[in-house]
Image 1 (spheres, rainbow, N blue to C red):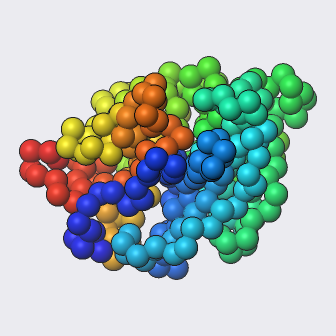
Image 2: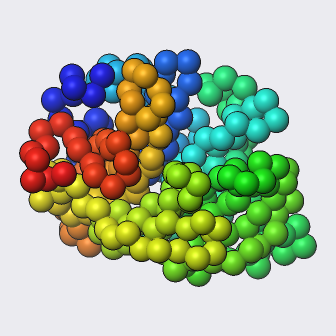
Length: 302
């Protein structure tokens, strides 16, 4: 499958379109890729929604399907991941309100979950009260970029990572009642997987993909920042960020850990765009989560 890819670029943004914040799940031979879908209309205003496509080979994709409304007071985006719980799929995501055309989400940005039985039809979003049921919504503070993770040692326990005061972490046993547990000095867009009985956190600094490891979600070791082939990719010159890891190393047809990420053609402060437009989704892969390759990579790149 990967050998047939001619380019790491999967979905290319343009002057009116951005694809950001990928989140992936593998089910029944398909890779489902969820992402923030930004589209600028004739009014010149960009709207953010969550959409998905699926593929068996990363070359041929289904029609784009949008699962959240178009509303500047909500601006859904940043799907974190999709987990299996209580015989349902659970997707976490954010709202990023920009009612007056602001560049970034305001203080009412919050995190949510949606549920599905088939990965196609999704429930209405439900607010994640990650600071506990007694903390009023207005006092929760700005929070974005959720990610759900089942504990590697206690499977009845779930963790939610989200961007606030570094990377905050809460836990729950039912994905509804949460307890705030602390924070990690990290960037945004968390993705956490288990490898060799350790947690591996991928997060987003100002540029690149930061990697940390921990045995317990408390003590973390920095492993450096990945920029992959950014220097050779015109579509990612502004910023490379928001990695999602889909670990298919035990799946015979793929046999790799896949990294989906987005790259911006221009820096976010560039007047030509790079946030609401000209953002594209790419792919890379690895056997060990340390050395990464992609279509067209040379030995010196990896």
